[in-house]
Length: 318
Ligand SMILES: C[S@@+](CC[C@H](N)C(=O)[O-])C[C@H]1O[C@@H](n2cnc3c(N)ncnc32)[C@H](O)[C@@H]1O
Image (cartoon, helix red, strand yellow):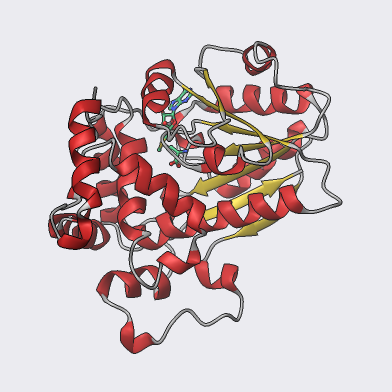
């Protein structure tokens, strides 16, 4: 079975490669690496699920890894070369992927762990094959919503160990969010939730976004919303062409570009106030120095020291 959403696979494949770089790996906790280590062996580098029989052979081979008998296809040099090509076409894209994964992990964790925070549930919309629900379901009630074929795919991909995330099929252009969540006995609308839209709002029409946000507020006025925002009008002409062309060939449909002020205004009309925003890895890490510059390789330098791709930020609304 091939992954239905090529855009979700694109994010997965870039991140699982980048997260292994020596200067990038320590930025992420072991549980995130564990998710990708376990899912990589179930997925080939073209986005196809590997059959359990073939997987068994791979896992056995992996036990011999020290003897160099196992070659993880995800570690192939061509993948790193593709990343460099990607960053050449879409300057700043590698930084953007690592930045958004790092920012969301840290900000969600801070929000959930803050003793004064009322949030106890996490709902991830358009979750793709991301790690968020799996990682946080350890301590919090987590729901991942995506279109039906993606949910079927993810159920097969998810590591079973400690896996408590609730997966629900939901099409934001057709289904009502409250109805979908109501079908989940574990979802408690009386408890405030944090809703996440990572790399998602570009794929639904503006009217659906407005309706989705209204439903989030309607379910519980104390619900919060955290989203990535990507303003394509701030990209250079070439970058914008390669970005939009890249999505077009996946067969997925980008919707009209909303600038940040429009997103903030849509949120504000519904009762969501922007309380924080981030746009850079260095901003996230504060004064902590990353690593000795001389030791960084080409990809790490692009990720850790380049400016973010213009127009990418994480927005947190209450
Ligand atoms: C670019 S991917 C992002 C995946 C994930 N959030 C991440 O950042 O790694 C966009 C995701 O939105 C999902 N999606 C697109 N249109 C949708 C819709 N109408 N309803 C629900 N999910 C949708 C796709 O299936 C895909 O998983």
